[in-house]
Length: 77
Image (cartoon, rainbow, N blue to C red):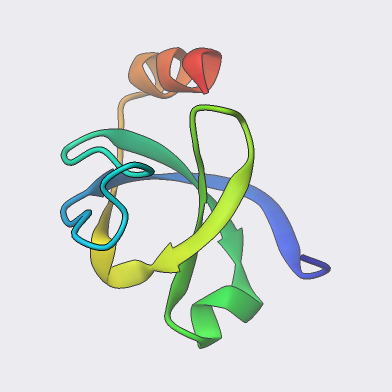
């Protein structure tokens, strides 16, 4: 995580086949930019416990949210 940037993005889960207990379909997650993980095709996702884990980028779609929605999601995360 040495190359982890402070930039935050948001992602919607579109596939939880291998992680049904960890990922909720159609849920908006906070995605932390991690260039090293991206090189391997992974995305760093913050779960409801506040911890971040690597998942295949294929499980998510990065989305842009209005500022008010971003603030709301970050309050919950």
